Length: 272
Length: 272
Image (cartoon, rainbow over all chains, first blue to last red; front, top):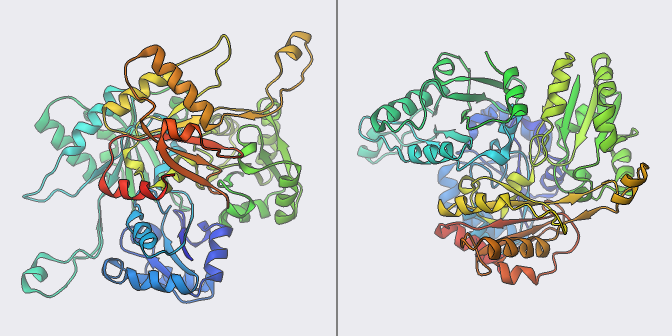
């Protein structure tokens, strides 16, 4: 059996009892580290904390592992119980459908153990999850690559009065351009997009497109480290949030649509 | 401190370690039972299982309690630690913003402990949460009350190629019409909407409105008892799903929008 276990958002305490049970009965325990490593404070220390809690070693599945060696893990899961741990929920912001598809093709039984995802935890600010439209991802702009397909989606959501969740880019274990040229893998240091950078990019695109999808006075909610003990939630205009120091990762941002009175009342608690 | 603790979707094993810690240090533990009681199998037995796990008695907060006596609970939370347990996530399908607003007005500190919600657990079928539009609620139709505001929302989502999550009505502790007339509270037996009834109502409205928002050949995914050990997920047309026996509550339904190849591949595993 392959257990795909959501770890939740904060730290090692956010696993469920059901998840812990799966880990306990698994002969091998992998942890997916490439997509959301930063959110969980998974440094070498983070891993040790988890290993202490579980009483067994963890195999860190970085990007290469996931892409190249996943079938080995699946073949193990045909013979004994294996857990694959993921930060958040297995089908939240980062989906593991490809893993499930591969498992099913190899006739491996899969059990998903749910947990909180950023996709539902943003509800804490009081904006109803019902009233969110399509979610967008904001990629880091480079000199030559400034994709803006999110703009149209935000525009449509706002036309319908819906809120928009913006997931912000994370770059972990990206091979450096230099190393690719040399044919030898070396990695850029990990980086994550801050709310400030996200707002700058959003406003740059608004200025270029000029369709008034939003503007610097548009009400937003910034979230940092959702689910951890020092989570930060601040409501304000884009202009206001740009100047807020949200601290360490991960960050995400909601662009607010039309609000109900109870939503307004909740947001007031989070205004600067 | 008031801890608002999400219990997750399945049973007592879906609480997180962080949630359990909050319960352990709370002098009083309330459990919200009116909105999603059925989903969690919270009968008197369910409560006993939880009490055994926590080693302390639970105070069941039914609808009247929540509306009338909540301030008493909040005043307690000013003096000592109190946990308020909710099925799913505190800000998922059923939001507890009103409780937070009241707490903040009374200067009670609040900590939210996240968990899985139906709003993110539907991701298990392989349809990306990113690609959902506004969520709709389908209320039980009566002879005289057949509201259809969901129709327009589904139509708009589908026009954008987005998936639509339909939350299905639950009626627990509704005063009976007869008892209201007599001025004495008596309750209807609890009832929940099945996927079959939901599809019948959806198709009835489509026939009346005739705007081809969807039809009996529209691909959907039905979910029953998400997160529990006997959860059921079936993909098929409305016509097909109408004839499937999904068993005990809770049910919900996704109306599928445009799909990506990986989404298609995942859905294939769930086709009848």
